[in-house]
Image (cartoon, rainbow, N blue to C red; front, side, top):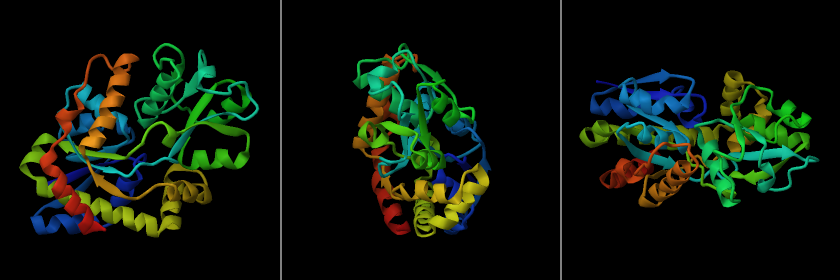
Length: 299
């Protein structure tokens, strides 16, 4: 059997895993082979699992919730430690927006459907505003810094090298720091049949992921050079961004499921989801100890 892991550039752990031999090494004793399927849009991960194009994938916190809402039968495998400095909602430093309430009626640029939707929806919800009614959400088009500088947009959720570069310039300030609103974990999940029928494969992938994370933490400059080559930006800015990540994995526990359920409830309330989602349906408690052991093995 060939085990196929989905890879997109928004998930650095998977991006590094695909460049290393760790997955093949972990799968070989099980008689399995490793393959990687590269794609550009991480929000399609649930769909690709359902189509059996991939067997395992990873995203931010929002795509597995929308995948459940679409009827895809997924199971959470592992999550990263919280990433408090992964991103931020930026506004112009000398602009009119002083707090989150001032975003009412403004346009905010963000990765719609990504973890950034979770961040913005919850931040607005806390301020008594609605993601669906009180702001206009737009997808990035590559000129966000220029548009924010010119006042054409009210806010921009930046991450990675873009965030590091924005901090260096001094023209923008953080209106919302990610860690002050959500845990912003990197989330890894699989199909239910893989989790229930071949949990040892899930464990092997998690061990390989943990090894890839350890490699990245120990080789930040090399990892930054890879990111700069693939995605643009400077090696310096990417090194700053990657150094802010925890590079640690945890099992998907009941506490994490509660975090996701809170997000799902907010998404439904603001109209981002059409109906309710029971996040616990994607939780397999029997997998937790095996994943914990796999993480320790890869450390």
